[in-house]
Image (cartoon, each protein chain N blue to C red):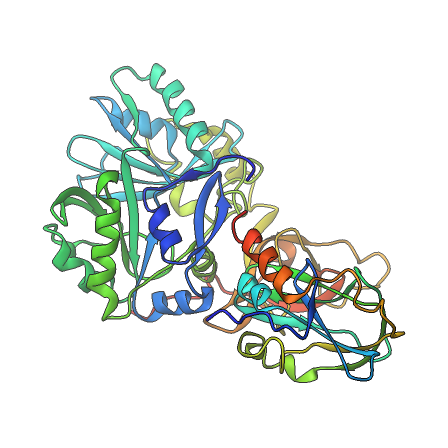
Length: 135
Length: 376
């Protein structure tokens, strides 16, 4: 049932993922399978409008489950290019395909080698969640 | 790992089943095994199995046991027949609610079930009161007994073959003693879900075996284990109070709509009786516990302020009329639902309200209590 973190994305400690496009500037952002399973029973999502500035470590939206509401934290700096509007009425996509169809926003970043700095690779993230699962 | 949490005798079974565990009232308890919504729906349509071994179970023994409980509880005790059960409150002298409880009249004792978070406080208080009533003993059996609940429309047919107690004939809010999977048990037809169902009290050593046996017996009929997440959504739909939310020392049972469990006419003087009688004589409570239905999918949560609809931004009319005590997304109705205290003037069914959900006004209205009533 668990979806292994794919190697082509980077991960934050607050369980967002970031995938850098071939153009070297556009970054797709979503939440990980681990986060979806921790939240469970998703009810509602609030995402920013295109054009909104986002900043690494800052809230860009929120996701609500039956049990609680959680902030969505941006893993990169930039401006929102596109929003996955299809998620709103179909949150089950997040459980089925969190790293693909479950993308939340596309962010236009400044590009360069620093874009994904500070984020974990798949191996480090897998280790991080294993430890988080045993707290 | 911070403070050491208490574990029920079924803790290892929950972890082995892949349950997500959480802290509740000092206990490590399962929130869900798979999904709150699925577990909720299983209880509404088939059956669910709950571990409630964190709750406090206290026996009152001795010739004066009835007098003792009559002194503590707001509901009647003297005059009840063996096998009867009641819901009641423990109040303080001011009429504030100390706990809400269920008790069973057994041939040689009373079994009192209290909230996990209030257990030590309640036991100490019962012992203190017992000193004034000679001939009554307070025995905390919480660590010796397991407690499970089987709830849902198929609960009776799943449980019946597992016990010698005649549960088919057992009425609502009645209890019986008998063998449950060969071990002595008390079985009550009560619950906290709005469905038909049973709560079973039996020796803790038998807990794992019994848990597995009930799951095996019910699986083919759709019985699933249910965590505290769905327990909360089920009780909320059923309009039932949760101590610490709808009930606290600052709330009296009359404003909570629990007047049916407060017997001011009973001969015994109980703690808080005079205060509650005075409040009742003074007229209707200034605030009332109401059920509220919201629009959309944002969920009102505990502490969110409630306003009259259309008052946002209007000068002089922006004071909240109440506060949410519990809220969730109803799996049955697919709507946000909440309970909360609202000023009596704004507490009529149909009153349009707005709830401040993290800065956004959620249109909502008061609906008839409870949200959910099982089909007869």
